[in-house]
Amino acid sequence: MKIAICTALIIGFAAFASAKPRIVGGEEAIPHEFPYMISLQQNGRHFCGGSILSEEWVLTAAHCLVNFNEDTEIVAGAHSLSQPDEFEQRRKHSRTIAHEDYLGGVNPHDIALIKISEPFEFNQQVSSLNLTLVEPHYPTGQATFCGWGSVAKSMNYNFPDKLMKANLTIMESGKCFTRYPERPIHESNICAGEEDGSRAICSGDSGGPLVQKNADGEIVLYGVASWTFLPCGTAGKTGVFVNVTHFLQWIFQGMRSQ
Image (cartoon, rainbow, N blue to C red; front, side, top):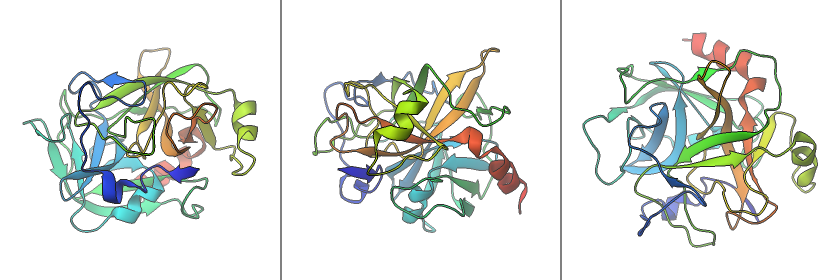
């Protein structure tokens, strides 16, 4: 069973995990370890993640925009969802831009920009990450992911209160592009997670950032969480991400628009 990984949150995203909650196979992040991380919230409840690109722009998954309305909040500097601290910055949106080729649901081009109504104030707890400026390519090795998605390897979602993190193995491109014949993977996707399902993304992780360090030690954004199979952590079924290197021109054009 495959899902766009924020669809089930309408009924489940208020639940908090207990006793050492974690992304499937992950661990709790150090508070404000990921200052570029965004929580998209509706009525105080997290439903998707995102990444800060600048003081005014956030990158997320296009399917996350389904839940947007005038009450949606874009929250930077968050760690505990139940106990907000003084570092949180909450904003509304002034504009959203979904990729024009995204068809909805589980499909390629699942990427979107959000322009916030008032710029973030950058500091140690809230800041942007980097975009690689190289030609489109498929990354290799390990990458880091963080999010507030479900921690359960079952159909019963278990959502953590605090931000979780995990290192995920990027599947070799040839395997990624042929692994799911019933849902062909586009060349602009990345597959990441463990083959045995021990570390995986899940519902609520949509829109979150998959990152690596470059040669200069800078954190670079490579992927945007798009969809996975249920139950989360199913062996042989890694999560699928949008490969940001294929969308750099689209991102920069969007950020220059008014």
